[in-house]
Length: 175
Image 1: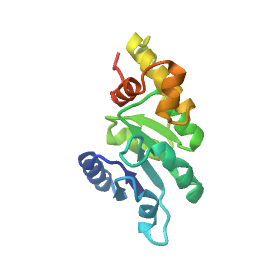
Image 2: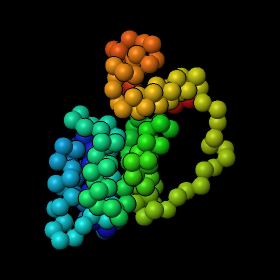
Image 3: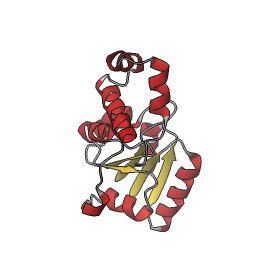
Image 4: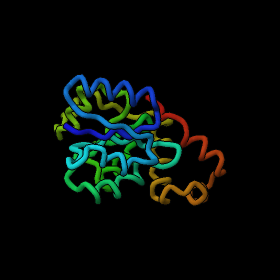
């Protein structure tokens, strides 16, 4: 499988690349800014799959999905993020991602997603979210609904723009 890995974390990118290469895949990597050009490094062959990070310094994975999907309509696209939320998962799938995984995701799980396999949700893994998690999810939803415009989202929420910026930059509460 020809895989393009787009992530701004160099350590994560290198480890995942080596792990996928050990499994027989050809992998090229990008920090994000040149992602679309990196897809052409397979020569005449097109990429079979694209692994895409959500938050990167120059761009968002959500912004890259439409351009990548337009150029490669049949590619298996999986969004990876350490900032997983229901809002961004729904937006990624709406824009054209096939799957959405939160980090840390093991190579086995990533490979299953790249092959289009879906895992059933285990009933014991479902629990009521904490108040902090509900707040974080709500902030993410409003931010996405405001087209990722911090100032507009802050006005809608009735909070200071810098406060919203700090809250969005944090990892989501685990419980």
